[in-house]
Image (cartoon, rainbow, N blue to C red; front, side, top):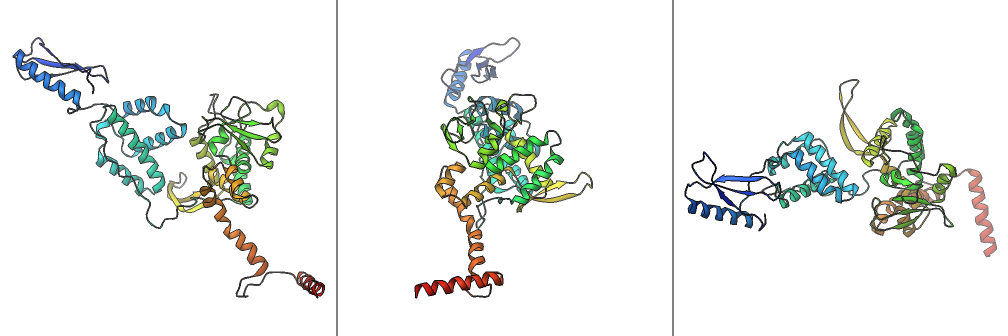
Amino acid sequence: MDDSIKVYVVNYPGRTNLVMRYCDPFTGKQIARSTGTDKQREAERVAAKWEAELREGRYQKPTRMTWKEFRERYTREKLATLADKTEEAADSAFNHLEREIAPKLLETLDAEQISRFMRKLSEKGMKATTLSSHMASIRAALNWGERKGFLRKAPDVDMPKAAKGIDCSMRGRPITGEEFERLLDATPKVRKLEPEKWQRLLRGLWLSGLRLGEALQLSWDEDAAITVRLDGKYPRLRLLAEGPKAHRDQLLPITPDFAEFLLATPEAKRKGLVFGIYSGGADKPLSTQRAGRYISAIGEKARVVTNSSSTRKRLNKNTGIVEIVSGCATAHDLRRSFGTRWSQKVMPRVLMQLMRHTSITTTMKFYVENNADSVSAELWGQLGNTLGNTPPEVTPRESQANEADCHNSLSNKA
């Protein structure tokens, strides 16, 4: 409320007591209530007290705003000004809220309802990180509602915390070349319309390390948020500040194999989106959320499990039985695969640029440290372990050659 509020005393025909009213600055509606007296002076004193309470914010009128109205206003007035990723996260959180709680009025979303919502999602096996993201979106929305006067007070939201001892490293794993081929083979079974486009998108993610949202927006057009640049000595990508994850304009290097993949497109066809996956008849790319679901379905169809510790329940429509499904390959697992492959070929600083990480710590944590097994395999394959009970596997001919080389080396030194 603000100082522009003015409460007036009026005499309604047929009413014994005088009425006081004001115009709500948020809705533009007239708000009225009885003064409890028919005497003008007493009514004016009551109206003056109510006006002071309204201006100082001590009085909060009950709100009858529906959840649907609130969501529409929040989307239009707040989310529209934020990044696309933020809006997508909020939409996902709101959709879960409507499925689990189905609030009718905004004011019914109190601390008890929020707690019940969190409990339901936890019981269904939602990851703590995903639940935290949902609750952060809902808390931000309710706080905005309080600032706008739609809520008396936003309920307290206890953010979920990860249990101690949980590994916070990769939630998936890189996939192998054989598994990638299985994804390509399974694509026509999931995306029966234009499967070639989706296979090409998977190849692009595998070769580029792009995030899914970046790949979907990648364009040949110069004025696009993410575009291919072929005017320099080497092919590059340009990301404008409004692109996903980009807070400033960037000119980025790409790997030779991804450049070769792009240059295979004839010049006459280098127009519009590189992967040509649009949202229905609209002249814009398919949403990241929807594309991600399709790729996850492809990973499930190909039976490429990348996170066995993550499970969800799924109703088998053919049998009617609820099945437990492990986490299968996602678009981000293709990005992990790219990072892992190139971490064995380039230095961390170069890998950091290829992955577009803002911190070298992220690069070291998620990719370089994960090379320990491959390095160990190479060491053990050549030398065996220190106890001598796992000798390297070599053929007799290789053994004789090694002995001859050793003998010649000693003779030369002598």
